[in-house]
Amino acid sequence: MDILKPTYQIIYAGKDVTKDFSPILESISFKEYLENKAAEVELSLFNDKGFFFGDWYPDIDDRINIKLGYESQALIDAGNFYVDDITLSGSRRGDMCNIRAMSARSSSIYSPIRKQNEKDKSLSEIVNRVATELGYTVKGDTSGSWSGIQNNTGLAFLEQLARETGRILKIEGADLIFFRLADIKAGAIVGAINKGEEVSYTMTDKAAGRISKCTVKSWRKKEKILITGQYDAGIEGGGSITIWDDCADTAAANQRAKNYVEDRTKEHNRFSITLPGDVKYRAGVRLTTSGFGQFSKTWYVAEASHTIDKSSGYLTKVTLQK
Image 1: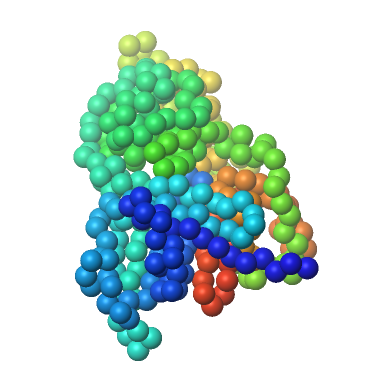
Image 2: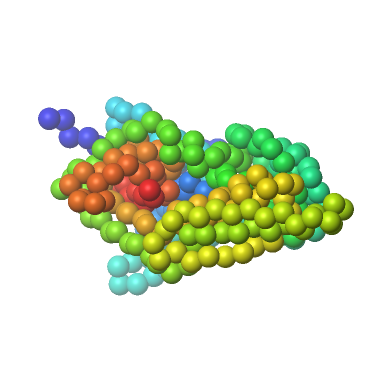
């Protein structure tokens, strides 16, 4: 049986620095999220020779691209990242430089708060306007309409739109991808994890904040009518909530209530598994587990991290939701 050898490539500011960094690299990691968070890369480098005190010290927003996986196999191309955090430290283990970069520039994450009335506009029109202002391209499902007021930063507002319309927003480099959770749940299964194959696992099940029943009310001032919608997921121990929103009719209010409940409950049951490195496990794919009793079922990957470390090799950690 062939022994797979982990490998990586680091492109920094357009230059391949893999050979320069390899002798001093302690670890390299890539972490991506299915929704609402920019992906991250982190480089942990020894600084015993003081390179990062001088010319090698990074600048904020420097561009980094990494690829990682196994030799003689297809690698994960993590895309472009922008330096967001630099930490120099020293201890008995030596001097270190840690570089953290995000797939979104800080200027787009911390954009100014904007207030704007988006009354009965198409979702596509609203999303494309905000994305263009932030320098992103929109992909995926932006069908339908939305009515309300923007009162947040650009990315936070787009995350709100995704939640309220039953979608997930994934940030991939310069792309903002909108898709429905139902599409994830119906996607192809890429792998199976059997008990005993994992390096470690953690299961959490939270009751706090769990919502089963949502009632949505909307007062249509012009028509002078009250529209009411409701959704009950039948979750044991789940609470109930009433929210006011701008809905065109009962069907829209029912859908808004369902979107709210599904968004609030999807994270209460999470299963994290660390495995030997496997490039096929990315945020958004589905997999099955077996040998875990009642937790042997089909899940989708909410978070995936891939780390190559000099001491532990290549490991993949997936955080699953059902």
